[in-house]
Length: 204
Image 1 (cartoon, rainbow, N blue to C red):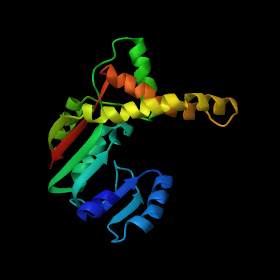
Image 2: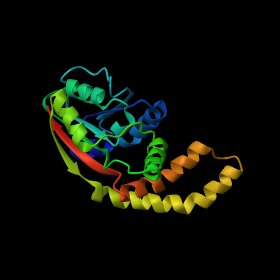
Image 3: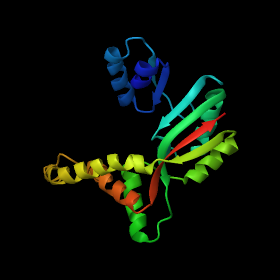
Image 4: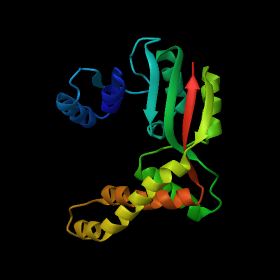
């Protein structure tokens, strides 16, 4: 949000369902947003309460997998966009179906650790977007995302001994451990082609 405001002079309305995230963002805005171009509010992206035909662009960055109902998000994005407005989402998508129990367990661990209830294929998301009224196109960005996932994997491996000691000391729990392991699970699942990173560009 700050990058868009500082670089392009764009007015941004950024939302999250997490009060902690919004509180942190508002404090940061006091030092970063000198022109008052960015506002933060607690809202659900499937029911934002923004007016109809309000925005030029809806940008969802690696957030839609957290929605159980992708079509509900798409309908809301369509509603708040002006005619000719654009939806851009960079996200995680199913690459192929799991072939065995080991692959299913790997994907479940990865998705649960990142609180992603469901993933869909890029083609399914495009179909849902077109059903909503958008004209949509998918771009595979897996190769662009892979270096960051590789760095995350190495970081997770490096901190595993410390995490184990902290768990033994009662300073970490299963959720903390799963979140740390997510980088390892995610990279392995991506290498197996079980999920891919992609960008959807859609116009109203």
